[in-house]
Image (cartoon, rainbow, N blue to C red):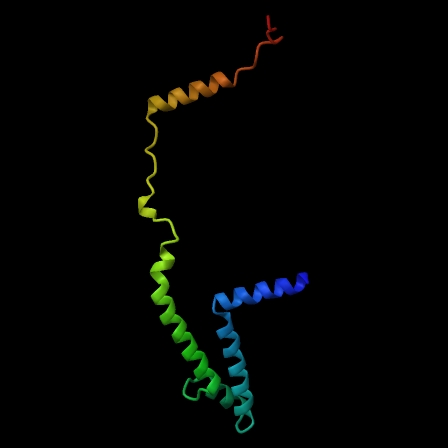
Length: 123
């Protein structure tokens, strides 16, 4: 069961970043090379596969799917940006003045002193 959940998580992650299109495109290219290699030399089959002039049906489906996702992501982009912090609104504090630094260093020095030995007793 644990392995199944890991595989489901991996598949969801791959699909969320568009990896399913890469997998489909790899299947399409492999199929095209095999199909072309049956009627021509392997080098020519590879050239035909990757020249972009001889797409198969799966290649066209992948292209259309990617275009549709890009249009959809452009429409939803402003909603996604609202989730992030606007960095222009973040203001950094000004550095401390030399007088403040001396005060901080003095207070650190007083806190570093050892307690009196033996410790005082409660009355």
